[in-house]
Length: 344
Image 1: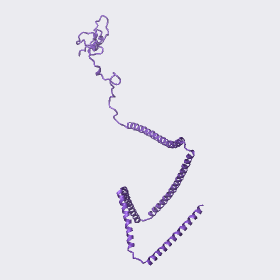
Image 2 (image 1 turned 90 degrees about the horizontal axis):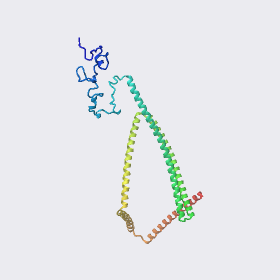
Image 3 (image 1 turned 60 degrees about the vertical axis):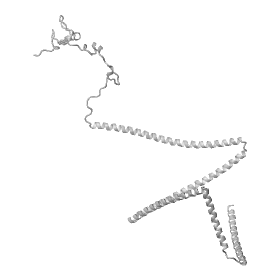
Image 4 (image 1 turned 90 degrees about the vertical axis):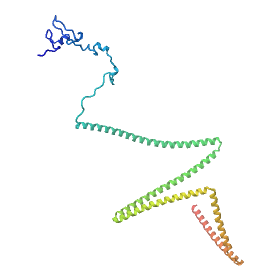
């Protein structure tokens, strides 16, 4: 049979020794065992209490212990200590409900993003409409400002004229002259506008006719055989190539014309070149005069009768030419009179 431990030994009444030491009193006349905190030197039967151990919070040993507060961790809640995360593993099996939750979360994020983009698009549309309205208002204000500037210039001109003691009749004459000029310009602008409308109508008519020809050509092309279509395609390729060649040649020709014009302009700007051109023209005239004189010198010598006859022939020819010119002048004057009568 084993010996009971110290804490399990019975007292005089059979109570455990631990309960007696804790302050449970026995019958009167029984010697009491001192508490754990009031015992003497620790031994086998007398252990030190928890409050009397060094470093304990409730004992006197805490007053002589060096404690560093900086060694204690400080968190966002102060001196309460660090939070401890959830212990244990997370979800071990990703089942259907997990993926459905993830899908719903992504759908919600996409819907939120779509709503945000729709709001931005609506705001952008509103801003564009507002910008268009502001631009139209700006154009109207610019026109009004220009009109007011013109009125201000007119008033300033009137003030200047009044300070210079200008006759009002002179101002009226200037006004009438400017008005007539403006009316003429307005009429010319109207004519240009009318001509432009006529040209645009003519262009539209030509474009419509060209479209009709194109459709007719396409219909005829559909009715052709394969060999004829291939031949038509070959001709189209040749036409495109020739047109590209023509455009290239035209560009080269235009470039050469510009170079020639630039060279002529540079020659005209140089005094020596101008002097050379003048001398060349004079030399050509002198050469022509020299040829005429040589021709007259080389003529055979005529007698007086022959010279007289030649002069008479020359006079008769001159008289005929003069008569022809006079008849032309009369006919022209008659046509002018008839045209004036028709106008009146």
